[in-house]
Length: 444
Image (cartoon, rainbow, N blue to C red; front, side):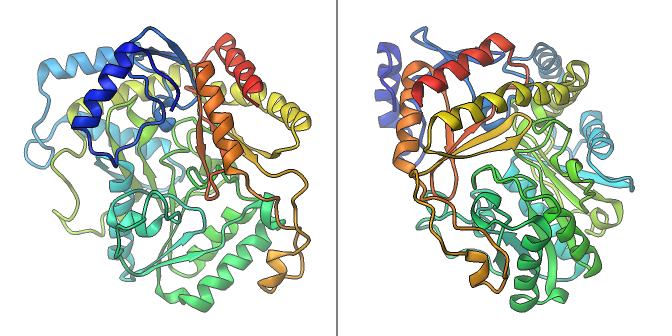
């Protein structure tokens, strides 16, 4: 953590006596207010925000339309439980999701509280609709912190360590990782499919669950053709293709959803994070026949689709349309990617620059440490590239620390802890984005 001011230090002392140690924070400053692409702490220090609350405040903090919608709803009522006394806001959010998510077929949606809860319910729905139990997930995946979603998540520390035993009938297969496997999309998919068929059995699979661009696992963009090949296999074998769009959704990658970039129409899509401008809301949207396969009363929850969160979601979606935040994400990419690639030329420890839209990353490695072996050849595939260079998590943490000292809020991620990720609010203006890039260059 970076050094904090006097007021933040006082709050931090109170925190130590009140908050469970297992809840971590990246910096020791405490936020007082936030807007657009910046945060200000209680001591008056300003931070350039390249985290957006982990891809949540896509429309910015305290977005005017969201604030107004929330105020109106709070004055009317704050909660009734949709399962007890329903309200229009829940229905309107479902209508928007059915229209926005990929797929020309008829859809249904159900609302929940968090991304993990959405994923759990997607698995429930897939198992109920198919009558099967096996769920296929991927190396480097992250799907949440509840018991089932910890089983779906790949990384042990800090997400899974010491929390088992975990839910069963979860099977992990290789992910497309172009920087480290050297495979094109169809070959990487063939490797994953071969693993499914040999170790699980095609007729046992209820769902193939995948992030179209992996988030916590390292902002891995699969090679072109990987996702379509998996979706086609799932369809041919009676399994449901489930896209976890919790981090990639709502304009983040330059389209409403990342699945759209390769023309994929998932059977089920999970959403959360950017859906409601910072209020807790999540959803499962899918083919009508799949979603309606569940018996009445089989889905729900006390707070799912809370009316205040629904009002925020409708205002956020309206803001995304009005400001064309898909185009804004593409603009951020057009500014950042050339600069990140120039930094890669300058610093040999930047092994890879990747991402899409306003979801970009640097992979930090030990220079000149690539090894001559081929992971894909070992798994029975003749074609492959050298293994990627050795990850350098220590240097990654040092870059992050220096950025924080300068007032740039940066996140890291990746199975090896060696990826710096960039998730600016989509409303960040060009001068603020330039400040962030200058701070980054200095930290590097």
